[in-house]
Image 1 (cartoon, helix red, strand yellow):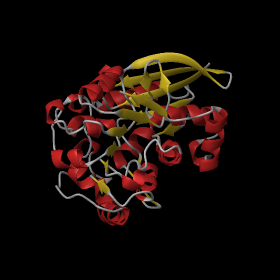
Image 2 (tube, one colour):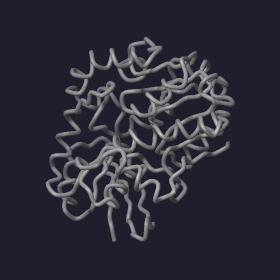
Image 3 (cartoon, one colour):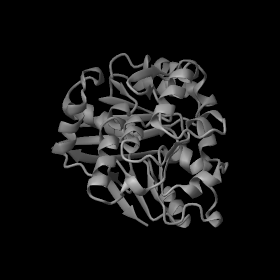
Length: 303
């Protein structure tokens, strides 16, 4: 049996374990949250190293991107260094492949015609494939990286502006404590509605659900009525919350297993295990090859 474990800085409320089969291989897939406790995070990686086939880093990215430039988050690299044998992934390989493919799929199938839609991407530097794919299809896009991650109320109206700001600030940001730039532990459960006018403006809201769920306006505002949400890592409670907000449809690049959509780090752990390659050896075509064998399609839920 293959084992993929996502060790997450997030809340234990999202923990799960399930067994399933991919391409004839049985997988035990688990997610273990540590409520923001970094010492426990390191202890889990150290104790499971060599006993599992892949680690996924949950609740933290290892890499952020500005165009073709990759920046490594210092805290994530430190955590990953405690795995001496088991490969560690953060989902970036999946974000650069099936999240990009998801946007093309939605356009080609005319599920969403991005050319006539207003799109809010809550953070582009951690969903770079999705961000670039959307920017190639519409000029009506706002990237909320400064607004939702840095706390600076300035929207970015183009992919070019996103790359400029990212290349300016990421060399500093990646060396900050990760908890300063992204909610961890119980902070992920808190809601702090912000920038309602941009949620209202958008026809499509895309990006990390931890940011969307934390900052989206309350249901009574009507800001999400009849909107499309493109995101990942959704539980049954998250889907019910979006339904109560009046969302028309929720689209996830990853598939549903056991009533939830998996995080990209989990899917990347599964893919590299099936490919039999170390993450550093994987190319885009390697990810796509395995995904095609799995008959991948995005998960679309009409609410």
